[in-house]
Amino acid sequence: MNEVLNNLKTRRSIRKFKPDMLPKADLEQIVEAGLYAASGRGKQAVVTIAVTDKALRDRIAADNCRIGGWPESFDPFYGAPAILIVLADKSCPTGIYDGSLVMGNLMQAAHALGLGSIWIHRAKEEFETDFYRKLLADLGVEGEWEGIGHCALGYADGDAPAAAPRKDGRVFWIEG
Image 1 (cartoon, rainbow, N blue to C red):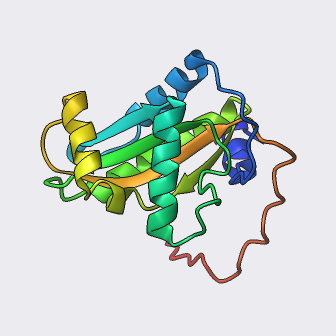
Image 2: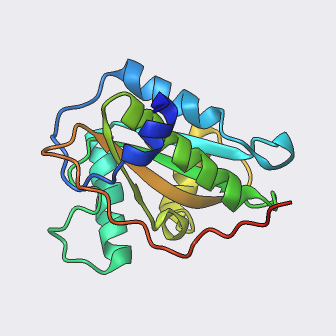
């Protein structure tokens, strides 16, 4: 089977990561893959924030946990040491879709490099707060942005889960 098609079929969400930080070169390749995601009308109206600072990562995890309603001891990033946060320009009508394509590219690139990933939600709620708006301003990111998701990255601690059986009745053909 073609390597790309095989990677698309074998990537799984990882829910237990080793604490070891990834090499920056790997993170850069993953981020670059996100930059090449398709975007509506070629606008490229998505930004990615790469977080490897442990204190900030832990702050984001605590805020995400609070928004999700979990106990304080729960880590919604499952121990992943790196987080890529994807945000879309609110003025772009395809922003949510474009950001979703970036998230897909990030997770597929991580898998291609032998790394684990998982898409974690609640970035929308986080980036509606003053703390995260200030974070964007401090980074020089201007405008109004909507959080699409967090791509938690790291080395899987254990085997990847097996694929769930694919549901029937999800493809319909109209042939000529």
